[in-house]
Image 1 (cartoon, rainbow, N blue to C red):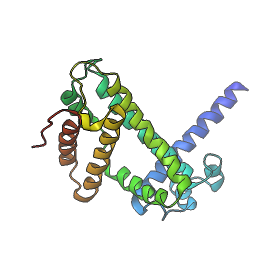
Image 2: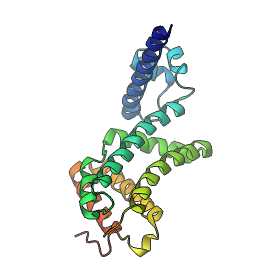
Image 3: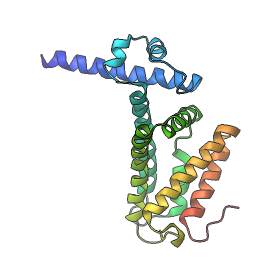
Image 4: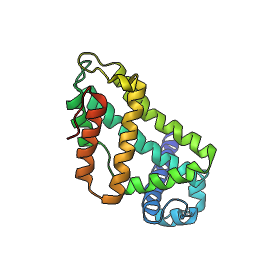
Length: 205
């Protein structure tokens, strides 16, 4: 019985993953809000029943996509910041973060569409804000635990203020990336902004 349950669980996990992959492709091509559940099912090769056995709505499916990428970004940031140990070398850490950070234009298109959708629906907006807060907490926890030369500029207030500034810089740079499609420039500019934000007298030239 346990073996059968295990097979069902694995099959359901695979179905869920396939639906997420299909939704990402369809959202990226057509835009969130212009896609139906039927289109996601058709792209994944599943029935509506398979969809509803995993998700209650397209909003819920999107949040699953968002959570995957938010977790990935948090892991990338935390991993890059953790390499220095407690004595955080901010410029070196920024270089590592910008080198590995997810800058996927298709994802940014999907995320931007959903931000517009969430801005018009307070309940959706609250859930999205909760997901964004997780990334800020990961950054703030690392900055708050750092010692040595990792003294934050007074204008940021504390580690939480610095985390808000970091996420805002990421949002701004990725918005520009949607327009100019230049990933390498986006990485370079993000590195300059983060170094300026997180160090006293940072230089963006």
